[in-house]
Amino acid sequence: MSGLNQFGRVTRCRSPKVEGIALVICLTWTSTTNAQILLSGPTVAQSTAASLSTASTDAYTLGPGDLLRVDILDVPEYSGEYLILSDGTLSLPLIGRFNVTGMTVAQLTNQITEKYIPYVQQPVTTVSLISPRPLSVVIAGEVTRPGSYVVPLLVPNSQTRQFQFYKVTQLLQQAGGVTQIADISNILIRRINPTEQVISVNLKELLEQGDIRQDVVLRDGDTIFVPRAEVLDPIAMRQLTSASFASERSQPFSVAVVGEVLNPGTHIVGLENGQQQEPPTVTEAIKVAGGITPLANVREIKLRRLTQDGQTEMIQINLWQLLQDGDVTQDIALQPGDSILIPQASAIDSAEISILAKASFSPDTIPINVVGEVIRPGVVDVSLDTTLNQAILAAGGFDERRADREAVELIRLNPNGTVSRQQIPIDLTSGIDPEINPVLQRDDIIIVSRSGQARFGDSVEQTLRPFGGFWE
Image (cartoon, rainbow, N blue to C red; front, side):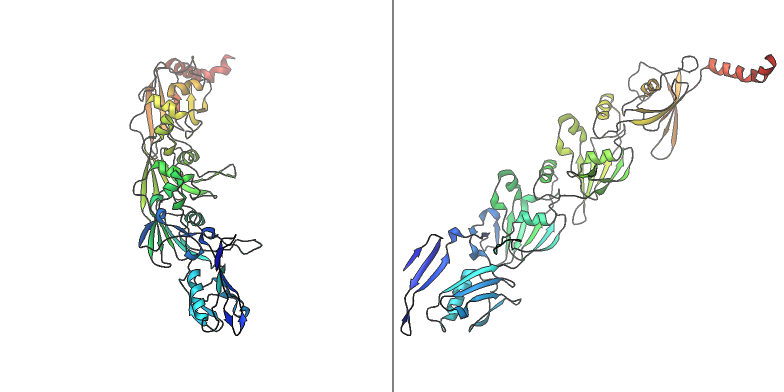
């Protein structure tokens, strides 16, 4: 007779006679519809995550390190807990040692039952997985820490023996997360247990459509390969930054910022006010480097990034699109070893300079020197879009009695180490003009000379100074 009890177990009972004694032997096994351990994967050469069916504990294949509970009904001397040895064999009373690697729990149950037939009349066998072996998985490709990972399946600090199986996203988190140039739509899992197959996983569908089937449960011996995206999509890179299996950087790291910034070189990013923050972005790195110069071409910024296989990826960034359209995908999150190159603009647009001066990645002020015949000579802190005329006014304006208001001299230290001197005619009504009212750069020096009348008066005073005591 047989039946399905309230726990989802099928029970079959027989009443054989052994040496004149009537016995009632019941064989019980768990219905697959109520299984607590879920695994995936039909045995095929190639498959997709969506095509993998969900199965019970029978999908788990046994191997060295698994601890089993074997019960032979009414034969306690043959029952007990047994460990699968390193050579993949299991040793049981009377039966001896035999290989069980690659078997499912159901297959092992049937084989043990057959092996005990010569010793027990109509044996009823129950096999349970008490403690699974640790999961050994290799992760390669575009992850932060590629390599081999061994994770225990037992749930720690639990009063009863509980265990769980890891999914793809959980192991990616163990490996530090995927990089921003990873192609998560074509992750490959090479599986060798019980038969060799390749599974294609599309985690992009998991993020966009909530397709949980893509988060495949892993098996011992799996190899996960995360390929590099053939085309770098700023939107996809931004999406990856917020994913649960994205790379998380808790420690500051260095990046190189060169070109049209105030302090080119290597800078530490990733820590603000001593507190952990979101992954640093391109604009934050530019700000750490002192901000852009007035000559920066923010439309053609290049981000150079090293991939896990040692190749170099060049990512084009247009921060003007960020300022005008609010396209935050242009503000790409950084990774250790990144290099940012900001080229020089071929022409200066006065309207654009005013907008750039208010950007978050522009310096708040830059220092310049105004010396000579002005009201307040010395260092003046001005905004990025300050012109020569505005700097003179910031220094209090010309000294009306002594200043030469026809022209001033501009001295500039060039990036190549040379110094340029330029005589610039003064026209206080002019807008931005490279010839008569240029936009200033950090550490520019403006020299306001004396007028002819002031020079003559100073010469007369100098000449008459020795006779000062005589006249007194």
